[in-house]
Image (cartoon, rainbow, N blue to C red; front, side, top):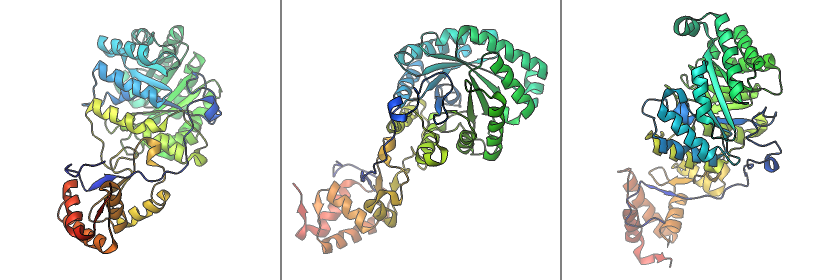
Length: 435
């Protein structure tokens, strides 16, 4: 409970009555689908969640983490129930190899998530990656090369034929070191679709178990991405191969594109906590997961995520990177479940679903009724009664509410002590303080 002397913004956390919408646990009994961490193809109604916060997320400027911070985040990702943790890019440094090995030992055993490392399509990177993930029970090598003409011409300076040969050699070598191999075609969304599918078929033919279709620069729209995913699914044509999304947010469509990919048949989503990542970031894990959960009748799929760990996971990543979330960030922003307008507050107090499409408790948060100049009597009275322990008669309530409104018009922050004195001063002859 708030202390009367505690300075607070004009708000109080008030946990409203939640609905009965539980979330399936990450088990075969709860979901009706096989184990969330099965490294083979995820069935039609099951989407694997591949978290790349510790790799792509950490690559964002200012987001690098110490080895200890990466380990703490990895433990929380395991508690969250992600299926795959991409723990880093081993070839980047000896320290990165050591950090990934620690993560593999800490969370990659005893039924933990698959531990994955990223490697360019060359023998050296793949060998280092295999060494880094070796301590994990279930491990994955994720190798990649660009397939768009602009990348092949200006960055790689390689022909299409040479790229295809590089893919075959890299995937074949990776499979000698690890049974679970993912191949990504960098800049897939700007690649010639026919050549892209040829590249994917080559990778699958050499043993790739997951095919990733990155929108590396956040260029495509949801309809375009859905069509591309559908084409890749048809080209691969195997129940033993999972097609994956990986979407960047340069045009603000990473989550929408990811969901469109799922509708088109992708059964792995690559995302990051808080949407961290290169430039404008990646698809936000919390937004993708809660969209699939909240609209599961539309998407027809489940995940193995323990949604009640979402808010905690967001806080872990914020603490590790120092990157604060905007207050209006979906799912995990400070205002995601906050209400100040009197009409909204009254509706939420009477029935949560009038203004909340998911319960705050479902993501490990609480509904917050913010007391400000837009608040109504109902929310004000509720706060005074439940937080200050004061019951007011109607005329006393009117006087206290009027005084509160005059203060709220003048400032954004009012201490609990000030609010307490407003109530006492306005209503002293008739106040009853609950013991």
